[in-house]
Image 1 (cartoon, one colour):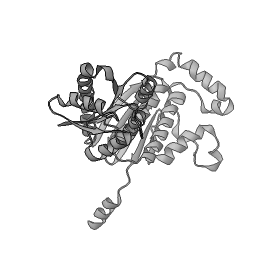
Image 2: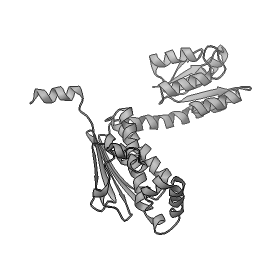
Image 3: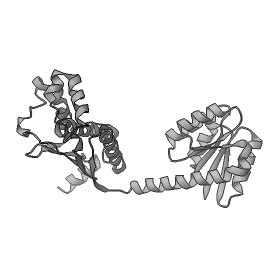
Length: 307
């Protein structure tokens, strides 16, 4: 049964909204008189949706919307607005609320709006349940020379890692930093053939030349292919650019103290520090990177018991 939490300090408005919702078959309604009480109800009953007034004592609707988004992100919040609350309503929508309905039009609009929001919310919850059961993922993307696409891919990969729950938050950030450095290397040094030496000598000219080549053939037509494979044990990412490549044996050791201050070695240092494997092909236009999950204490105990 669908449960809706109605929050309003005015008894008449609270009962009106609740009565309209209770007319809908299969909808159960619970009540709270302010945001603080609503949060207590959320802990006890975990409703499917929150319908709240904006102007309330103790904790208003704006504060409640923010708290629900932070603590119960899958529960949508619908605002009941009245004249004089428009500015607060806009803030609440910006900070976590899902939709709104005018108190003057509760009779006409409330049931339809709640039904629409519940339908979308149900799809999102089902999707979340499905993603929590993913144990392996593999995909390939081919990207143009567009930094925004590269950055979006890094965010997507970090999201996939979060879904699989094989790395903690700090480790996912480190992996993302390493992957972004590898992608930028393929973009600047690979496809655009902008020398890292130029960056050391003239920072502005380095980026000016890169911007120019993004619109020039053959550089502008080159792509970056990224193959990703995730499972419960590791993440493996292979990045291939369409540039002429380089001799990987000539790469300086970025962990040598003499090279730490050189801009050209920063990316490689982060890649080799944050990842378990970083290997280039012989042509130098492809890099394969692997990060393995460390076993938990329970897994170590089990493994040792069978040793």
